[in-house]
Amino acid sequence: MNAAARQRIAIVGSGFAALTMIRHLRRQRVNAEITVISPRDELHYLPSSIWIPAGLRQSEKLRIPLGHYFTKHEVRFIKASVTGLADGGRRVLTDAGEVANDHLVIASGARFIRKLPGIEHALVPCEGLAVADEIGRRLAALTGGTIAVGFASNPNEQGAMRGGPMFEYLFIIDALLRRQGRRDQFRLVFFSPAEKPGARLGPQAVDELLTKMKSLGIDTHLGHKMKQFEAGKVVTEGGGFDVDLILFMPGLTGLSWYEAAGLPLSPGGMIRADSKCRVDGMNGVWVIGDAGSYPGPDWLPKQAHQADLQAKAAAQNLAAVLAGKEARHDFKPELICIVDTLDKGILVYRTLKRNLVLPSSRIFHLMKRAFERHYLRAFR
Image 1 (cartoon, rainbow, N blue to C red):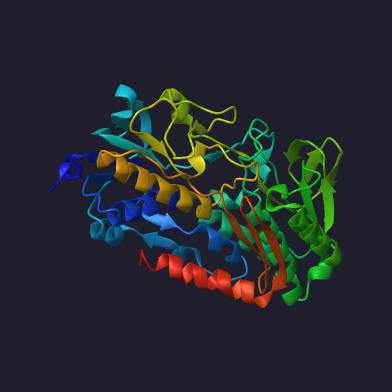
Image 2 (spheres, helix red, strand yellow):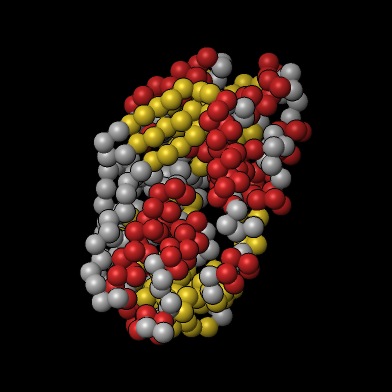
């Protein structure tokens, strides 16, 4: 064993960023003790939850037990929720006791801002697989009416948002209703405080999405600040409209324990980090995925692919530090998104140098399904 084998790495979280971090640490031949702290030992593959209401996926098939993965990579799992940190991050405080470490990786994600009055009247799709199941039940029970689909951002950090799935839910619901022969019984409305929703995808993508909505007879209510939801109504500063079902994705902010732990936070409540995923001013503390606020372009996405890229860079940097070297790897800003429409998809690709949008095609839908199988193979 080398010196790294005596090191203790604690990883908070069991989502995309955490699991990718584990895999790349082992690929870097890091023999440290790795402990994962999370309330659950299964991966919920939310990117495919968009297909649950249409019956293309079942929620139980998207809950992937991680016991085999943890065993394969020699990971100790502690089922617990983090409540804080002590000693500059060297001790993680949980509801199941303390976990000491030499390096801490925070990959516990973000939470949705639920401050909008009446938000209990809306379903928030990315809150979990159970919500996707409920969307399917509500759709099946409706015989007609108005379905409103929308999203907003964190007003203090515009990049802290996840809007892509809402475009997918909108187009998938439209396609599903057409398959069922009852689209003419429904009005679909897309709403957002932004005049150009989805701007992080690039101007061409925004135009493509809005043009598609118009071609499908989907109404829009854009550029008006949200005021509240009511039972059967969406209310904005630009007026309100009656609805029978609301799907809404609010902006993101940090988990409640981040501030209590004394972590450096951005205006939007995320953990401040540099391009190498090191937490500002805290030695041996790293952050990856949605939990962090990073330098980069204003379109830097909150999505699983970007979390994976941050985890890869952080693993390379942590491995270097354990070997007595400098951290030299910046994560790559990259947005890859297939906006699925049930049987087709629109491909959006963005880096610092390129922004590409390819129009709706059956092949992109098939690519998204194939990627799911490829990605989950490591855990099954």
